[in-house]
Length: 120
Ligand SMILES: [Zn+2]
Ligand SMILES: [Zn+2]
Image (cartoon, rainbow, N blue to C red):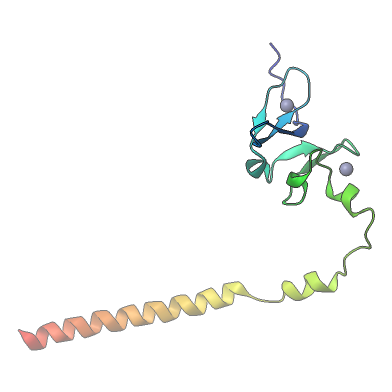
């Protein structure tokens, strides 16, 4: 029995019930997966036969193909869009929020302690 690891070549099959499943078309492999669960999984492109990661787009295809094969019709994306996105600094924001939260917790603790003292 061959347990050799391979990259599954997935093809979609639709049951009579309308249920869909991706199965590996390679010999000696009975791997099956629900199409939504195949997202992010590695498979073999049906056009160029190279391994690629399944995307939201490719899991809708009966014979999934990779982004390179899909993009061949389109003009390449402008790099400016990516540059603008990387300029935001989420680390700075979360630090500010954290120090603000810590400050308010300390204030609450101080208040409850002083309240207790006055009541007793
Ligand atoms: Zn397989
Ligand atoms: Zn391809």
